[in-house]
Length: 541
Image (cartoon, rainbow, N blue to C red; front, side):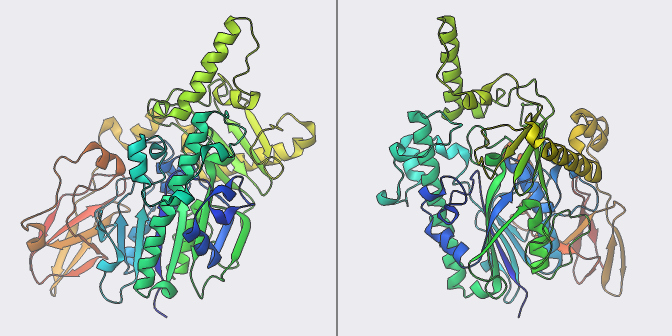
């Protein structure tokens, strides 16, 4: 059998609100997701999968490196990290192994992506662009379920969900709202829209799966579906809670995965990179901290997560989960879990919490007992929070009762707290370093380090290429292609593209293993994650 293809489908901001998770995740029975339900029935469904961080870019960095964000510096939301030299991005490894690598069209890994990582990174990237017989690693990331889509105006929302039939739409009056949310019209509307967006995303995922079937590639492709973190509402996205970190994770590969398999053990999205490499028969780099999920490998006893700075919100939270409990440590208990956030506070669900809290202040001014929020809901917007939290998630899936002060659970509290301490010591926790100090260590004096220019020796019609910068990747391109009529180098990329880490050099660089034939002039260049790319060197016979 030829090497397995990898089709990785990711979405934004959802918990396991898919029909296949009915009875596993609260509220999943409301979902309308026939395509993903079928995918799960044909493969394996992971019932307890967790992100490493409750926000997109740090979580995605874990998926793409196989390393916890706190160990490589990618934990602050919106940063530009300089990871250790041996850290590699997953597409780089696949491309070096001969795979055709594509991304349509979203990176946002907290690290600038080298131009040699993907064969095609564009809005039209597809596995169909590969050479005949070449295996592929194809990423498709949709924005359909991103939190911003919940709050569109009516016309824009109708367009965003244009493929959802009337009989598939969710009635706000029938929604089951989690107890940590106020049962108001605004929350009901937002919850119904959230589920409608998931249905639209399911339809679009079904279209991709149909293309795979049309191409006759189902039997030789490992399909992965996953979200990056929890839903885009308060106490989920940006919170290191169950609803912030619990993920849908589904895989299918006929002949490798038995149809209808259910994995109940806890797993982490840090495990994805080593899982995909192992399935493809590619050696897993020692730096990766995850565990392959397919086969008989033992599952870890604990999975870990945390949140750090979220844009202008300064906070530090760490959490550990075992099969039963979630332990949360708040390093700044004097700060609200719902600090002001310029972007999120414009969303109606955030505004709804603020509005109700303001009304409670008016009630106090009138000498009344505040009753707009329950104690659980009020804790979300409270000015402070406990230093430690412990929840029996099996008995209390919505994390309503904090057991940290309950003597009956003291042993579990100490065990989980100790496991968290040991994890931080073993892997290192760069979130404990003040961010200005960390940035100074990466970019002394505010200056980005530059990858050394490649060293080249030409003999016998081949160029032997090396680079003095540890961890550097090498690439080459014929001069005739680099200087074509459309060189594809953006001199002033837009700020959003820069934040996503997309290399402005969009020329079709080939990845170099250290030696390339030189039958015409070529350009050679080097990249090191977190550094500026090297100068280009022209090579002639």
